[in-house]
Length: 294
Image 1: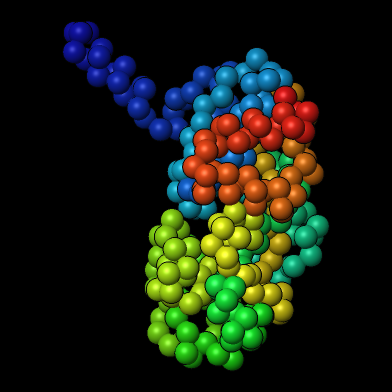
Image 2 (image 1 turned 180 degrees about the horizontal axis):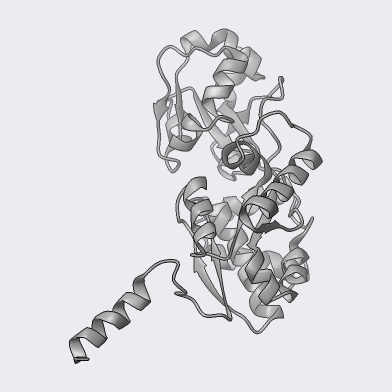
């Protein structure tokens, strides 16, 4: 076998996805493309590095829900933080349950059976979808709930991120439930600019996550979901069965974060990264040290 062929084979082994690209003692943590996922990923990485002899590889900002879901199914990543309502609505395509415990039990059982993925213990906070409006405009127009918004939507404009525009637990279902009809179709906005768009008055309404630190920073107000359309979105680590069988100690290590982060705490952590531009790794470790976890 000539030297050129040997080099080509070695390159293929390194770059082919899903073909054992990481070692048996390496845990690959993935994440979606927003700061909260990186912060949580860094927390889990720090816990693993502190409490085990395993190496951690970080693959954050991979993409949206479907992208990360496919990555863990292929074995490109070993774990990532997911949200109960997202798994229930987007992956399982179910819509009937709203009770937090029942949704958690449903996704835990279905993921174990269908995907060989384990849902561990919830982290604590519920990062629900929400609609927001500038506080001053909301008070002036007396819009406090999504039902209030629906009555006045004909004179308002909206901008939503691409995933919210398509998800059944996003704009399509919300518009139908509340009969919302804006003056024109909602604009598609990159998640990084939605807050400035509403703060600058380019649009009146945007979608958000309830734990986003930019809500108070931009003086926005969350409209109450008075018809309880949005399901619960409790954050939970999802791990491949195979990984937990090889490294059973991981379950106890990862569950150290169980129940440790409230909505207000997660909002503050997101603020540190998104507004103060601090590194997710630093924010994560600072929090873990304050909680006595590392």
